[in-house]
Amino acid sequence: MNTENRLVEKLVASHPCLSVFICGYNPQMPERELREKYGGKLAKAINRAIRAEIPGGNEALDKLTHLSAPILQSGWTDRSGNPTPEAAAYFKQKHDVVDKMESRIRKAWGIAADEPKRQVKSRGRSKPAQKSGQRPKSGARKKKVNRR
Image 1 (spheres, one colour):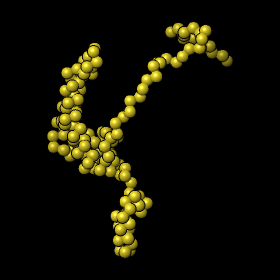
Image 2: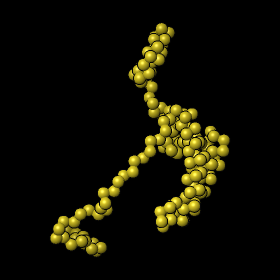
Image 3: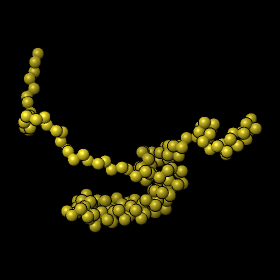
Image 4: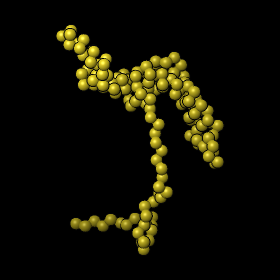
């Protein structure tokens, strides 16, 4: 049995991809362990880990929460499309403090960094095309007829 363990260790050391087949290593295990410990989806579990494991993490996330409240009233951007002062303060706090704490948690737990989300391009139409010769539907609904 001892020689088998040494052989497995040598194989895994020489070919790391074999660890999946030999040892049952799953690259998503750290994520699963974090989610089991702190509960919820990954983003929520990371926030809970920040609060629990990093000194000052609770205060940083609370500040981010308090900065987001005025944005709900004033909006993220002004009429010309520039970020409002409240939104700028929120993004500064998120970028300078919270994102760094999140990267520390991801590194400590062995979780890969998030891939940036792709923006979906609009096709230019928001309504389905009407067939030619049809009138647009009015707001009135047809009454249902009960047939027995």
